[in-house]
Length: 266
Image (tube, rainbow, N blue to C red):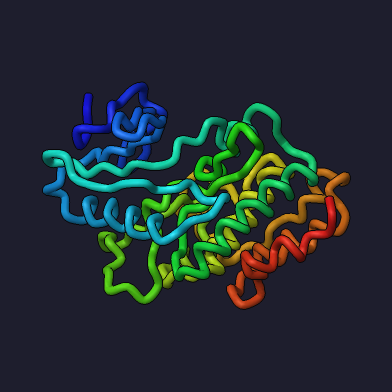
């Protein structure tokens, strides 16, 4: 299948809530890329606007720790997004295959993801869906933040693109303010990254439950169990920083830009 007379689709690399990603060849430039096709028809206004929001948000960003966006357009009734092809695996896959991870490796992942988020936050882009599957590890070991599908550009004239009672995002990584239905700021991404770090070293997210609502209530009201209580070897200088990332108050969390300097050398 040829998209926009230049992108020849190959095998599917994965499917999410808004689109399916394919390995593809840009026949004009002769390079391998990833092409994301919107799943729903262009008649679905909210889905189409979310897809375009991803393109606008990601196109503002250029950093070695963010998956690059090359092109965006519409083919018949579907939108497409052309992105950098990351040859490697997701952090979710690494966690499944190798986890729980030692502090040194977990910190390496989080520091690089924080560097990417710091660039996004400087451009007023809040990712809003940081989780292990949205962190890619390239063949050279570089961590890249992916999938800005529900990102928000702060100050932009956009609605929340939700129906009543629906919160966009993944419950296990949702900040307390977002769980309460409040606006997401950069601090929400830091909280989500803290949930990822917790899972990397402890083997599970800080809060779990049989129903998403139960998890959301815990984000708002429950205190996370220090990882060292689950694995005594996790005691040390990293734990207080992790718990600070999981602070209920957004103002109490470190910024993404500060995280790299907050962590002692691993």
